[in-house]
View 1: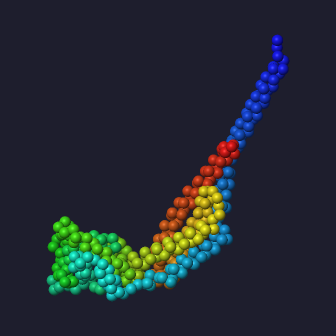
View 2: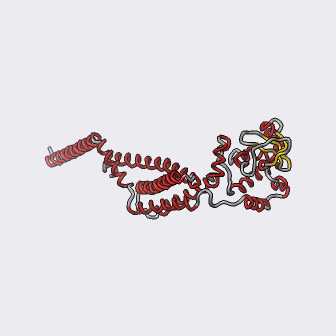
View 3: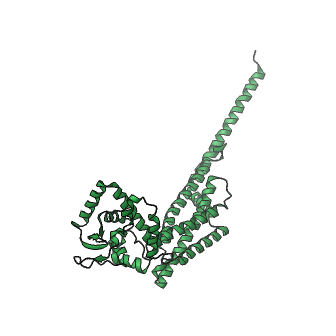
Length: 358
């Protein structure tokens, strides 16, 4: 006997399944149409996301305050500490050396306490004019080059010799240039290698003496030249050291102070962050980096303009300009990466829809 009620119930179940399938199919069609619509309007959507990124990372009134403060600090640093300021005399530099040498082992005392031979300026009757003097030897000897000096200066100390920036090499005795070194610079380097192989302590002591001498000359009025400049153009090295006071001290000081101000502004600005997500933090960091990049660019541009108008190269902030260029490159790269991540993630979320997270 046929159970009518059971058949009706089964038919109801089938109809419910058909209705549910139709609804799912309709949702699928709607989702497909939504995605097709997004794809067809991709250009407009990407432009809108680009505008959203610009709005989210645009500088606010608070950010502008940070920007003006950062510019003010950078400009104040440039003119309160121009290249010729914050230096010591050569005699004061020698005193620093004396203090440093009290910490050295007695067995190295002879090497470490003697004057470096590439400071010699007096010549014997056997040597014609070398062009070296108290005011020229800093940019005419390789021992004073901040990079090449580690090789040639150390070798000069080991062999009691002096090598000029044109690689002309002399033998030095009792701080007097007595003759050209046998076989020139190659002969001197060969001797240095031989001495180092025979006595490792001599090599260590000579490197230490070179480091101490760099330290004593670093902060003086005529400091250490920029690496390689004296070899490439001796006249330019002379102007930079004696007239413009652009040397390793002024450049590294500018880099250090500019970087310190940038870091200080970055830390304080991040204290005002109140977002929640990782993307919000990155968008806020974009604003922080914009403040730093803009402030460095404005300060460096104003510095170049002032130097051009006054023709006073002592005011040129080479270290700060280097930091500004570095920040422009690295910050632009960071901002570009965050922008790409923001747009791609937002576009992907549009494509996937809210059901992705259900």
